[in-house]
Structure formats: C-alpha cells, structure tokens
Image (cartoon, rainbow, N blue to C red; front, side, top):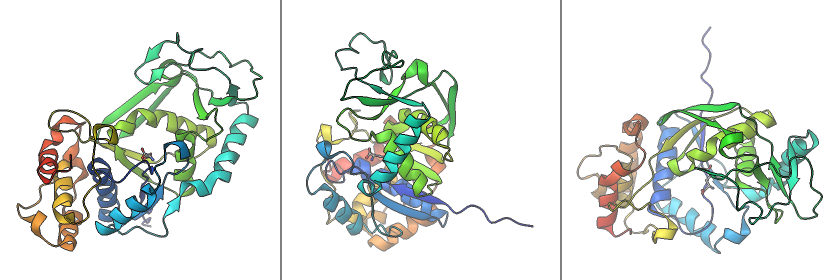
Length: 310
Ligand code: GLU
C-alpha cells in the first residue's frame, strides 16, 4: 500500500511594521517557492497583534506589494488579530496546568540578571508566586535540551532554563507575546514547514517548547540567510530599508533569487514577471543555501543596491 505524502502547508507571516522591504521579500520568495515546488499551499498571514509597533497603512501596503509581485496565496489573507480567542485559550491552558505564572519583575529588577546570547536570563524571581495586579505571564522552562534539525542550518540545540530562562508569553501591557501567537496560529493553520529568516532561528527552541507544552506538532524549519548590505549591515527598517518599488518587479525578483543563491539566467530580470516565476518554481533549490547564514548573499545584495533598494 502506498501512502500519500502529507500535504505541504507553508506560510509567510509579515508584521505590519512598515512596507515590504527587500529582506522581507526574500523571505516571502523563499517560503513561496518552497511551497509551490512541492505542490503545497502557501498561506499569507499578517501578524497584527502588536498595535504599538504597527505602522498605519502597512498591512495594505504589504498586501499590495505581494500582489504586484505576482504572489498567489491560497485562501483569504489571515489576520492574526482574528485568533485572539485561541491565543487566550492556549494561555489559560498553560496557566491552569501550572506551566505558566504571573511575573511583575520590571526591567530594573532584571538589570543584574545574567545575560546570554538571547538577552537577560530570567532568574526565576516570581516562580514561587507574585500577586501584583499588572503582571506579565511567563512560561516555565527546564534544563532539558530542545533540539531541532534545521533544513539549512543543521542541528540546533538550546537549554532554555540556562539560555533564556522562563520567558514571557503575555506581556505586562496585556498583549500576547510573539512566541505564543505564532505557535498557536501555525498550529491552527496546519503549517508543516516554516521557512523564514535566520534572525528568527534563536526563537525557534522557545517556540518548539511551547508546541510541546500545548501538545502541538512541530513543523519543519528552514532558516534562510539574512540579507546584508555589502558593507555587512543587516537590511532592516532600522538601517533605512526602503519599500520595494512596484514598477520593477521582475528585476527586483531576480535580485531576490540571486540573494537566495539560485542561478537565474543572465537576462531573467528583463523577462515578464510570469516568466521569472516560472523559471524560479521550476528551478528552485532550497539546498543551494545550505549552511549559509548571512554574509555570502552579496550577489543578490549587490543587485539590490544597483536597483537602489537601499
Ligand atoms: N511576524 C514575524 C516578523 O515579521 C515573523 C513570524 C515568523 O515568521 O515566525 O518578524
């Protein structure tokens, strides 16, 4: 008896903090090509649960850019803010089972906490109780190894208690923290593989820990190199990344393919958009980026600089 392979479901999940810049386009292209080359679905989710960080008009502008660049997502656009009830239900289940607890520690309380590569390591001050009315909620961790085998970056391991400590899943301002929201939504949507930038790889063990506590399946992960300026700076809103232009989509898409270490024919950037996508889907090789973290994506970065993307 032959078994059908499980259907592939991927996603792109931008936060509406500004227009789509070249770095986010590259992540969108990678997740899209990975899904399409596996005859899978590709979902588009706007991670809009952090109003203080949101920029007005950014959701519309991101959707418009993706449309102009020819992305075809499956189903309706998903807005993370619509799954608030599910986020709260997951939070409640963690609290009810004693896996999460209120914490009123301020930044100042943690000023002397030891620091690791992920930031201050929570020393567990509120683990045994805290009755402040305005508290964050932290998820308990222990010192077991959380391990995953990244499709591009290989085996990754963190010991959360030692490396991050118990971490915040609901912020003091009442908002659900990114890690919890993303894990609940990926589970709701049945995501089978997360393809995203290396800058989020450090977060993955905390997300896997949450999946384990909530009884969710863990998807596969592939963390792609972050886009760096030829001078080494990471491309981001903070370093002045501009929104991608609407009038040069084939050329910019071609630069994204170069950044992803694909080897498009020399004149692909001058072809019609549909032809660029056709070539990209037919020839997609995720493993062309095997083990690459950042600096070596410069051919794409150079092309982006030539186009004036930053
Ligand atoms: N919304 C997150 C961001 O834009 C990405 C979520 C994810 O890919 O896990 O940084």
